[in-house]
Image 1 (tube, chains in turn purple, blue):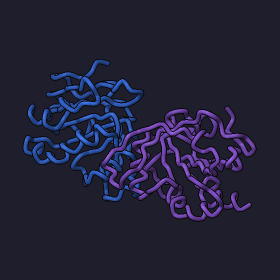
Image 2 (tube, rainbow over the protein chains, first blue to last red; image 1 turned 135 degrees about the vertical axis):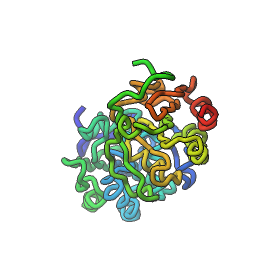
Image 3 (tube, rainbow over the protein chains, first blue to last red; image 1 turned 60 degrees about the vertical axis):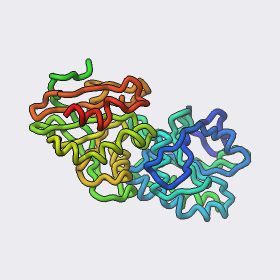
Amino acid sequence: MPPLKPGDKFPENVVFDWVPIKNQDATLAGSPQDYNASSEFKNKKAVLVSVPGAFTPSCQAYHLPPYIDQFDKLKKQGVDLVVVIASNDGWVMSAWGKVNRIEGNDILLMGDTKSFFSKNHGWDAGMGDRNGRWAMVIEKDGTISYADNESDPSKVTVSGVDAVLKSLQK
Amino acid sequence: MAPLKVGDSLPADVKFEWAPITDSDPTACGLPQVYDASKEWAGKKVVLFSVPGAFTPGCQARHLPPYIEKRSEFKNKGVDIVAVIASNDSWVMNAWGKVNGVKGDDILFLSDTKTFFSKEHGWPAGMGDRNGRWAMVFDKDGKVTYAENEKSPGEVDVSGAEAVLAKL
């Protein structure tokens, strides 16, 4: 399927693999559950970010931390939650969140191993099964208001928090 | 191919992906390189164990930690290298080692994404591409002296540090 574009609706049956973060100890593995994004995103303004891999250099250095650091700015623009997905499983995503000191329910890290959203409705990385590096903004009524993919998955430009913030301020 | 059994030799061209642990910060990513096990393990006594996934409950709670705690007991039995493999990539394996407090090459965290050793010469988990849960011991001449697979990948019995130590 072609990637979603602004004006499209967020599809039904989008499910991610989620191991909620309940403590800060990355050696304690949590319990996986299905996260139905199609229903959870209803009436929420969500930023969905996809990365090629947890614990990988670009994702770690330039992509995830700015979203954590600047979450308050996103919140001021009406964003309720940020969901970061990769092709890693929910356990790895949860551990990645913990070592980045993510707490609470504002930024959720999940495995895109259930309904393969990135492949079916976004962009893949062109590197095996890995997700591409991209960002989407989903409005409260489910309409996509921003969707952009990095032409080079090792770069963080259009999918970074700065670009997303800029689109929200328009 | 059939899994290796006692008396078989470590095949040539077994490669893993390896991001060496050079610090203790899991937010500092490692640098992946190819680890040529067939070469590196020549003349060494090696314990290799395989797990279905880094940061997963069974592997984390009951499989990996006893190997870390008993690392010196393995050394006393003449083991030069203890290595753990999974189908996760080497960045994830590197981070898994770090959060478990492993330093340097005490235990090598290798990614079985190069020559798919578990699938080709060991046992898969029967859950997608995941590795099975098993352990093998290679002697200095490359001969397999122990090779056991868990009947249920949720259990840690024949592949655990205790079982392997008992055979050494």
